[in-house]
Length: 272
Image (tube, rainbow, N blue to C red; front, side, top):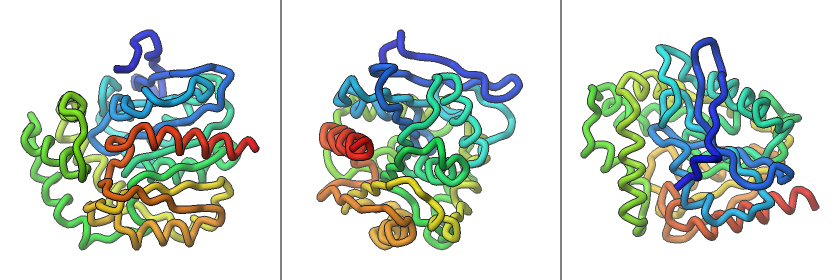
């Protein structure tokens, strides 16, 4: 569990603040860890337990998620990018390695394009493809539109379990579901169009940060196929793909020690 003494809040807009965890040495390289839809900063707990102390992990809960505020608006990727920039300012971090999981990878991509000088490196985990695929997203579009408060726990648990291909600790999955229950239906519905319609395909060639794409070869999310990973690697000038055999859409949940090691090696390689 995230150490309570490491929890912070930052005001990102009038009347809106988000929660974030600040772990590791303040002198270390800052690494932003951005979660996907319905998750929170706690979704990175398995990885945080394995990260070396010389990396400074900054892990927010996006607005509407976890213990962050839930305003009436501001749930698009660009809003999240502005919130992340405010977090870095609050933490006194000029630039960071930016890692995002699932829809969090879209925020990471947009941050790298919007703030290239603040992006030391980019890590994309279970990333959707660089251009919209409405047909592949149609099922999720219908499910999100049908959500009502309180969001059905069975649906949330099925959603979480569908992102893994192998076993993960039951207590951790319970935490993921409990955090997802904090998210109102209106937040899922406000955030989803920006995720579904996200398209930076023509801009990816302008990303200057070295990029690591991590994907589980049992990922069954229709918009996060092997083809979409190859499209990202082909479009981003300095990108490489690492495949986790047997892992699903959330390889950092299934193999947190390996993920932490790969992340630390990537960060140290940037310094070298």
